Image (cartoon, rainbow, N blue to C red; front, side, top):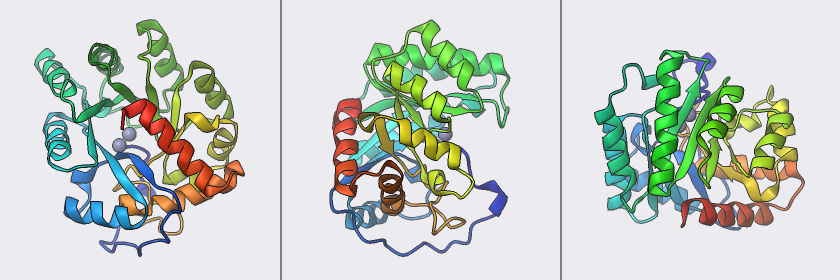
Length: 275
Ligand SMILES: [Zn+2]
Ligand SMILES: [Zn+2]
């Protein structure tokens, strides 16, 4: 979950048409398969038809983290992230963190996330969010999995806590929301920036400036489905098969050929998630 497109109100349950498939395969680095109102088989089939084979499905609490791990075990090409979302950290227990650590150790789980800090919604007290984020950083390091960060209006504290705890080797800022300066800091530290459909939004020029300065080998693409549907389908529910709209738009912003961007994303995916 992330910068949901709240201002447009409830989305009509009408799924957009399949876009032209990408010339080179990419993957969806962050999706909530369990929140999209389509069967998983259908989401995978439509994604494949658009040139997206692998999907990382992301947990936000214990039930969804369990489900994501189960879905990843059941379906080839589905991998899981497990975590307690920062918005859900009020009164977080050690038992919950222990279960996340157990789930994170499973082979089909490739990431600890989404964790991080959300000062926009501010649903959980900052102390609880910080404690949870620090614990998830520790779990990622102990299990050797990538850390997938949700950072909403909390850049400084996210960067500070990562530095204080010692960042894991592989860090991904999901739905990257920083400007060019933040992108430079992330690039210096080797953090990967995953761009979502909101990079296509009219008012997202600072995000496009960040994308321009982000090194090609530190860029990923994601849907965050069912949220953040890219233009020209903004307002409708998002599904992994809509990634081509975002990738083509990103290639134009970066001024690189679409196949080159796809190949760079796939190579980074291999390095970060091991597939
Ligand atoms: Zn998400
Ligand atoms: Zn998020």
